[in-house]
Image 1 (cartoon, rainbow, N blue to C red):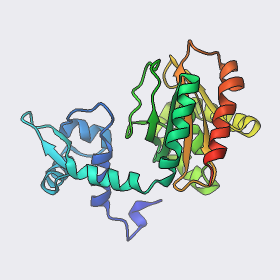
Image 2 (image 1 turned 180 degrees about the vertical axis):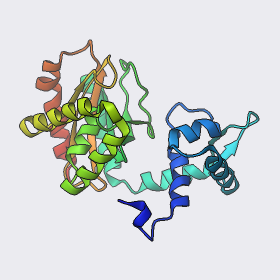
Image 3 (image 1 turned 60 degrees about the horizontal axis):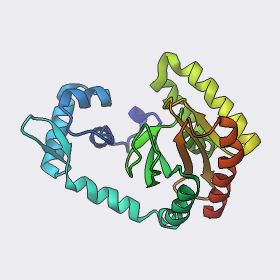
Image 4 (image 1 turned 60 degrees about the vertical axis):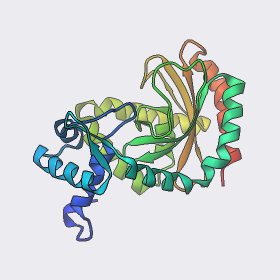
Length: 249
């Protein structure tokens, strides 16, 4: 989408939302400089946005002058989660799969070039990244991200591909080659995988859930030392495929 040519597009609103979206799981408080770097905006612009967001109750400023998400953000998040009926249906079968395999099971949706977790079942053996509702991971290098990429309609996939190319810059040819290989594998097996590509000590497999709106994917992940890629494909992936089929609407 060319925002400069879209008369209905409100740039100021989009930039304010970009500031809120810049926060990631584990962030305590961020200053205007950090937010400007994450959003790719001038610091002066970010300063005005953070001031406005504080006035509206979406950010709060601490004694150091940095900002953290305020309770008003929660009302938006809870409203969004309450509208995800699939999340409720998925919770119990996800828990069972996690207990049976000793692995972590997550449900995610796409937001731009990242994936947002909307439901998680954490295994006690979990190492590496934290799995919490609201946490985000990259689209192109994770199993769940690749599964959501496969669920995109052709036109939307092309748009997202352009965003990824801009995001990765000189690294894009390598990332694109792996994404293309994942697309081929998905066509042959019905699942996507990431074996140490996002986190060296984490393996994962994921499957998009047919008919979900918004598009969602189910993901199973765990420490790399537990299972070889071959065993992930032979033993874990079929269970994730069955769960995705069970949840399809």
